[in-house]
Length: 450
Image 1 (cartoon, rainbow, N blue to C red):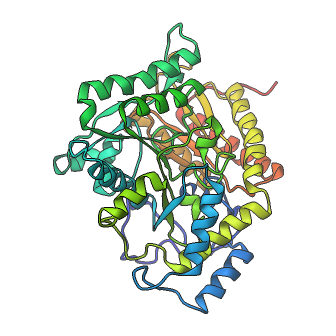
Image 2 (cartoon, rainbow, N blue to C red; image 1 turned 90 degrees about the vertical axis):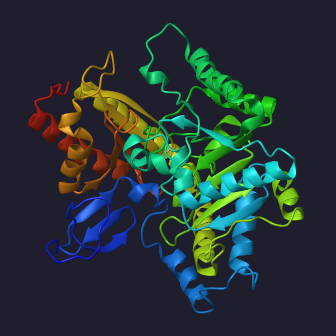
Image 3 (spheres, one colour; image 1 turned 60 degrees about the vertical axis):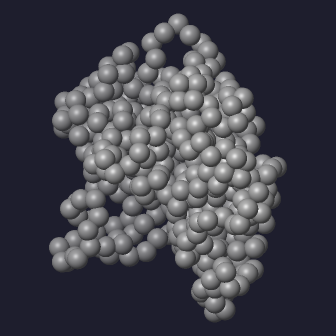
């Protein structure tokens, strides 16, 4: 019951029912109401809920040991998961450091980058350039890299100001450039920023290959990715891919980096990597960076639950499930179906200004004018209201403010990788109903079906 007293607190007082159980792409509350998990929670539940094979492998590990501190023992689950992870990532990424979540994975990447620089005598390199908008986590180090005002601004006096460059939001541009030229233009902002900051002070550049919560599944033009790699190589700047959301198959490849043939220097993963079965993430790098750090005295970093055998057993079972059932391939195939359905919404709802994404990481963005992409009035709280209307109807989607957190409304649609074409149709029917209700409530136009 939602009126049961609670001693917990999170972001808000928004009441929610008690969860009873999950089945595949569905979640069922204690009243028996069923919800389609159209956002995989927070883009986490990549293989769906309550997978019996994963649970059985977790139970088998529970019967043996639930904890073994990494300084005291090696464990087969952590070694096996590390080997499986390396086998599934591009060549050159062959060292793995386990963590419990995305913020930890990002912090680990930045700390490895800094310690590597010290081993090379580059003591002045400490600046990590990121993009605005962006999201990299809520711990202080990750938050300093994040470009999202409502989350970062309250704590700004407590952090250093890491440099930012504009995210490649080419869908907002009104110029005569081709998409290829736009991609190069945004990439060269990084080169300009490195020169402005002083190349000898810049340690790394961190980016989401496909945008997450702050930019709503933003995909840059293809030209952007290779040029960024070139610029980082030119100045000896390490390239960090934040694949906390995109990694583990969500975009139709194990890493989104593979779509563009890019091998980052360091990758951060979490969310779908453990798929909600256990708190788990990973920082993956190459021995080129790791060996000098270990030779210089060791990696000065760590978490109590790093390499936890139960979490790693869950993660290994998740990756095995992905392989056994071609869930990464299904993400690519069903992503095409979902993208087609979302684009079709633009014919009915003139206030949907853009649809974007890759694989099963997709989003649509509202606009008061599709030509100019002027956002809706922020006072409407459209990003929150549509989510509530969908939730009432049994569909969970995920929203944020698009333009740095202060205005604009985008909605992530990122169901589990097990979704079928029939289930996409079921999900879209509920979404259309919620959009109709939202349009009627706000007084926005809706085009009649042809």
